Image 1 (tube, rainbow, N blue to C red):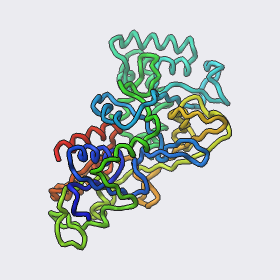
Image 2 (image 1 turned 90 degrees about the horizontal axis):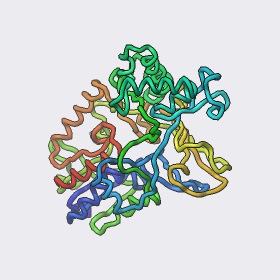
Image 3 (image 1 turned 90 degrees about the vertical axis):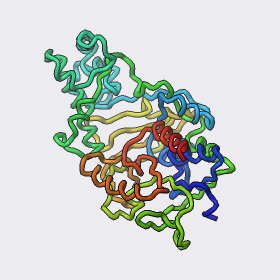
Image 4 (image 1 turned 30 degrees about the vertical axis):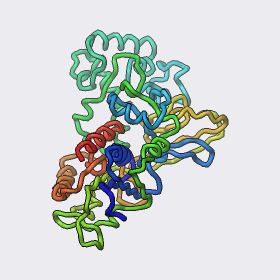
Length: 399
């Protein structure tokens, strides 16, 4: 049975599903093997026990400037118009300057990325407005400015804004997210932290933004619904394969795999961790269902200074689901990935040492002519959803 396909794809997330559909429409017989018990990868969503549509692996908000990707996905879903907005929840340093309507139990909120309204929330209406005017005068031709640029400004008040943003938006949040000390954070990353020179409080500024109207899982179900596609769940591709130096063999058949394989999983695991495990950060999710219409004012609230969790997301804001008297939130806790089967590797830890380790696995993969790597795990890098969809479409064009 396994020999009658034109191509195998390991993984039914964005990378696997998009490439499967594109190849199927070119007349290829496609076998998709998914290790989990569901399709959709980390974008998988489902109803919880209370009927709330949740994202099992954390919030996924679609945004892109790539019209071709948007048009492709739009064949399989209608879109709910949604523009994500994030606020930071921080303890107030100077209670007297925070507007009363911004205060909650000794804390206050401001938009993230930091913008002109954030200045007013942090420093008060008058002082924040004055500082905002200084920024606009100092950078009249820019829509945003980095904290590196601010720190280099000769005006000490402008430079001080960079220090405030670093302390209240960036450094503590980054320490929690990546488990790093301040001195270990890449200075290039710090330098790129933006301050918007406007009141635009949208988290993303892409031309196309929204949420699949019926959810991501429904979108992927329609995408994979094609006579040339067969999907096997609870199936690890490695159970069918054995690796030789230059070939991938069907286990027990004594012959090479007769078709290309698109692999979207962890590359170190594909090669049996022969060079050691690639480091990742994983996430623990604490879901809570509450007997109320809403928990917070925004879809996501970042805790950028304190708390053990990085953020709280309330799904009804994202999905637009109308379900009175009940809401579900999720708190995210970041920690090192250990390889435990119950964990999910979410974020590759990109540094020279880890890149060198990945290069060893990539060299092994390059020996296998039938093997094509696709996605954040197989390529050991971060991709937004639209970027990996574009990569999948490009790969399908070449095969």
